[in-house]
Image 1 (tube, helix red, strand yellow):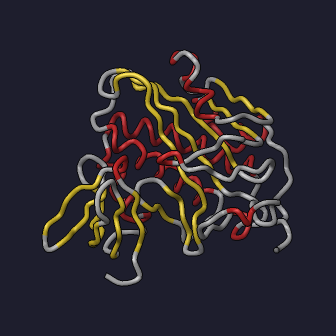
Image 2 (tube, helix red, strand yellow; image 1 turned 90 degrees about the vertical axis):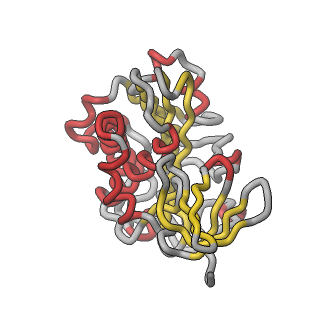
Image 3 (cartoon, one colour; image 1 turned 90 degrees about the horizontal axis):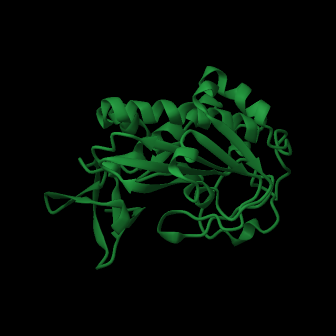
Length: 273
């Protein structure tokens, strides 16, 4: 097991996070830090929508962290970023399925902002590098998504996970930011994420997803790759061809394309078609 990166160990600090956000800090109504909670997403969802908008909640440790489809997320104290941001869409969303993709692009932009390279997005919203998974996003909506709704955007990122007690329980390939950017701190990563997400949300609300297309293509690690899609029925094999109008994965099989929605499936890249 390698030693902890030089940037490890710095406690979460609201002042340092706001400083890392720069002028975007004015977009937050509140920034709250807690030592431990079950889930930062659940905590924000439990608040009245008016009190959750533009509120950021970060935890040093999560006891009930989870990802898509209820998967557990390994959340040791002091090592990673566990962050949620509440955001109200007064006019709703034209296509709610595109929101998780826009959030993933915002986080990928933030990772580039702190110096990471060679990272990408595995549809719909996992952050990855060639070595394995860096983190993921969990978007939960409250209210009518096409009229007036609150979105709670959860982001979990491995920052200095290497060497953490219990890390051997992770059953998939993974990496952390500290391996590639040793001096990075959780405060710098949190500031970058919270600076980029409001910009991405405003971009989506005012311009729709077309303005994300170039970045999605740049970060999309599945495009034109052979994949297996696992849903409620039989596994499906095909080639990933980007995303469809509802934010689903475009799967090409036997010359035809179908859009697979995120709620229905998980996807894995295959070594051969």
